[in-house]
Amino acid sequence: MLIIRPLQQKDLDDLYTMAASAGNGMTTLPPDRELLQRKIQKARDTFEGRRAPDAGLYLFALEDTEQPCCAGISGIQARVGLDEVFYNYRLSITVSDSRELDVHVRTPTLYLTNDMTDATEIGSLLLADSHRGGGNGLLLSRARFLFLDEYREHFSDKIFAEMRGVSDDQGQSPLWDALGRRFFDMEFVEADRLSAKGNKSFIAELMPRFPIYLSLLPESATDVIGKVHRNTEPALNMLQAEGFNFNGLVDIFDGGPVVEAFLHNIRTIRQSILRPVKQVNRPLLDNLSASDKVMISNRSFDDFRVGTLPRDAVRDEEVQVPRPIMEALGISEGDQVRIASLKETLF
Image (tube, rainbow, N blue to C red; front, side, top):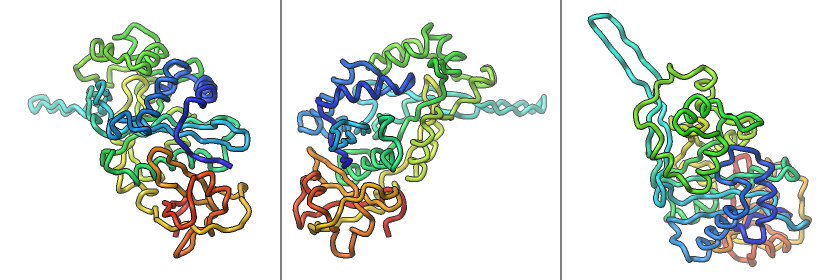
């Protein structure tokens, strides 16, 4: 059985293994045990009330209860830019005009901004190779929206994701090679590592504050601006299906796009419903397609859990739940649970 639950310290080894296999460019989850342990502790402090919920970090694990292991992770940062400045480039147009020469030129330009300050970020989506397929990535990504829906007061109305940009197998980013390296005198991997550790003062100190004219950059760099890494395409497709769209901002290191949506417009949130639980004796069907499954959450804050059920378990007046799933989610008969389709429209 696969269950979404809050990340715990016991997941550190599995998380490190996944981070090490993700390659370069996964800024929020570098293969650094000390950093990963600090992230887990920050998330535990948030779930357990030692950190303000509207300034917290929420990390969720995909647990395989049969192995058992942590087979994936996803996260929510309640607000960005509060503890440290959050940077992006805005892709814009600079217009130069001369009536005397009859010249009108529009030049694509990058401006350094802090536009996403105080917005809610979803990220840190990582799935073990052993658990790819079967809708597991969908569950890991979309379960977060049930939590956002349940505790809207802790989050911004604007939800965004900064997508991993283009880099090669050696971790070389075309945009970084053409732009960032000229100001930072370091490799992309090193800059990414420093940023992941929270050491972002070097960005403010070294990043040019004046506009960057794309016509001055090589085509290899401009071609990747707003594009995602090939391994990130499924995650982008999932978010687009939820109503997220490119907002004109890109990552300052690799040029990956920023996509955003208003919380109330996210598909899973718009279509989620509440139903009381009725215990039934029915088999656990793990081989259903993603289109035939629904997500069910226990609506808890400190022990938030999400599982899946067959679509036909949802009735007009109740949702029929087998005892093993009730025990895994920590729910009882009569409890109100939140339900949303895993892939298709629920009704």
